Image 1 (tube, one colour):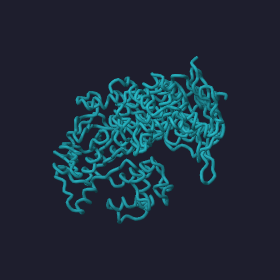
Image 2 (tube, chains in turn blue, green; image 1 turned 90 degrees about the vertical axis):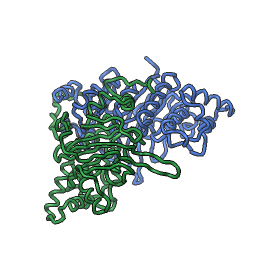
Image 3 (tube, helix red, strand yellow; image 1 turned 135 degrees about the horizontal axis):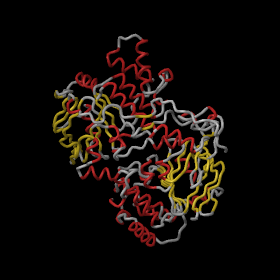
Image 4 (cartoon, helix red, strand yellow; image 1 turned 180 degrees about the vertical axis):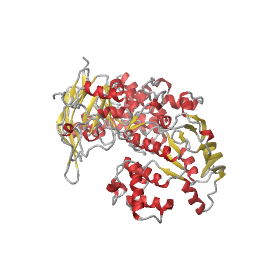
Length: 336
Length: 297
């Protein structure tokens, strides 16, 4: 079995609102990623995808607070480190995080090359300016980025190029885990493809050892990641390989998501598109039973009473529902 | 956790959750009367010494009851074209015809008259409402505008309730609420309820689903299709999402640098693209049945 790069056990984090209310946006999430693998996280807006990404860094700032659980990166537990140590020794070097609007994060008054010097200084790496420069040039060339970009201001670069430059800068220290939160959703399809190609190249060349990719665009996840995990209301509801999840989802929520996929391919015009009625529950007062029960077409009264644990059905597949795989497949079959 | 073998899975009762494309997929709209058409429509912007041709001599024919998608990447001129269609911008050159007649929106009275025939839904539901107006007054305005000013209060309430139930909202729960108290999907549905009351001949939807997630997207699409099937409205759908355009439209126009590079029936354009740009656009979209070729960038 391949080495596990990231292991998360029962991670729970919460937001504390101004009214002193607790909102558990990540609720007992456990996951693991093997070396060289990528994991996609899917779900509706507000289901906790981005909060999970923030929580995985082990660096918490208000209103987000750590509650319980363990994050183990390459055998080292980072959940009990103090914020300063996390900043210096984890962020950038062990875990790199690319937030949603990363391309707008660059200071417009500085040239791209200066950001790389900043990264080195923040991590107290002793290298001369010349050494940093040659390293940066080498890395840009390796990733197929123009070396001239190092001498440009961020505003001189196009959106897609800016995004690729940000990704290259944030992975310059060869982090073990790369967390990308919607890295391509603000770009048009061609720039998106270039960003994805670069990220896949980085994995193939071993610059990053594993990747977590967050997006609500399912066709993109299917093409980028090995595994897909679906989140709902702060919990994992299903995990499996990308093709299992897209073509054979078990959980009613995953099935709803997968049936909302629209791609320009023959035959897609004739499929029934499914909408899931209602909205996710308010996490200030999460429902006692299954969190999806209120919106589930197949729910029975008991669903609203007892909470369900994740059920492991082998081959890396887990799902959270009171019904067996066979029972669910049976109803799905009658429906199609 | 034990599996509950004794309880049977509840059989779903179908409540408008599954969307099917209503109407005839292969209907030939060229026999229908023309609703909106344009010849040589052009718009040029001058900023300082630079001149930008945002829309460059485009021709189009939109028929009654047709669902048309205009697809293009950012900067292709989609929004400028939609503003011209709505009469918010005048074309620099060329002419737009409304129901076969040259469109005349030279005075504000004529503009108002034109807007009785064409309405729009925009991308950002959060900025589409006046924040000081409650939801009932938003809907009441629509009834007054469409000639229902003299109806009794009960009749107006009945109309508003009907419009809300058309988009799966409960009118009784919305009265006395402000639009910002709703979620993005709900606001966009309320927008469709407005259109349902106004019953314009043409609806222009400018990326109405790009700010809401995939599951609510299906609901919005379903409602737009129902609206089209019930009222025979012409819907012009502006989007950058080619998969979405393929799913809902009868005809597709592909726009690049202000020009239509390809147009025709959805099946024809998407499955058998001719223009190099269309081919590239389709190959760049990730798919689930065909491999996504990353080597071509």
